[in-house]
Image (cartoon, rainbow over all chains, first blue to last red; front, side, top):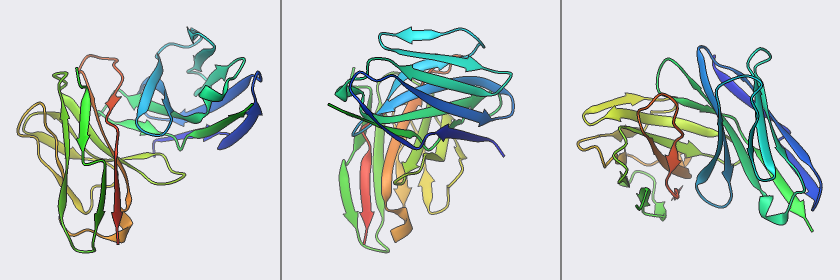
Length: 111
Length: 113
């Protein structure tokens, strides 16, 4: 059965800390892995990863994929209160048109 | 561009009532999806569509129906609402190129009492 597992489930840090969020997957015929940030409403897209070892970076956020070990990490450096959100990982397979979502990691950044 | 628009934003239904959640997108995306999100759980796929006239079941289709008569619209129908259908519903769409992300609507919070 295809599945995506995220850890930790929740995390509380202080502003300025660095955090690492994990996503492991077991999906047949992997095509891509996506990270989304969900605040109060709709998930918003952060990164899409298709190749191992190539880091995607956007400001203080970065992500990398390891297709051999079947996981990805999302790093956030110098966290700010605005980073507080649920971070969702989704994996898309080559077959079918579905995205398999993890349960998310709830990040709370306190001043 | 409005992107993906869902209506209504909130709704309370009584057990056994029916309703349609509307979803429309103006990006000419062929692929559209309906998800439900329960507290502490990930997004579960209800139904999806790869183009007008084509729909398929996802992980949790029971109790729901969909139609796709146009590229823009993908309504989700609940025929006999049950408390287990209390959830937040998200509609999403994406282009049909190889690697594209999904764009989400703002969600519909449905409570069945």
